[in-house]
Length: 136
Image (cartoon, rainbow, N blue to C red):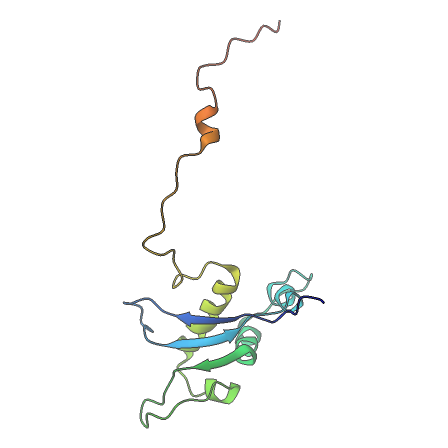
């Protein structure tokens, strides 16, 4: 019996104080082949602006965005994206890419994360000056 793989779904959120704090999106990850294509690791140029947004739209599962005037939910589709502020769409797309890379600002280490202990290896390295060279 083999291991059944599935693509991970990431939740994108913004920290308190961010312009888009409160906006939330759930976005599917990429297969490794898609990732190579998007980043240019396949030898291509990688995704540029519109291609990146199109890829984001195709992976968008859900979000909590509502129309400012009607309060109606905006569908998480390519058509729905067209109704959302450009800067918000770019921020969500960039946060998704950063999350895939493991560097999203809205996903910091928890406050309880320890700073770590000094390396045992470093403490075992002799720190006295080296002897003068005997080479002539």
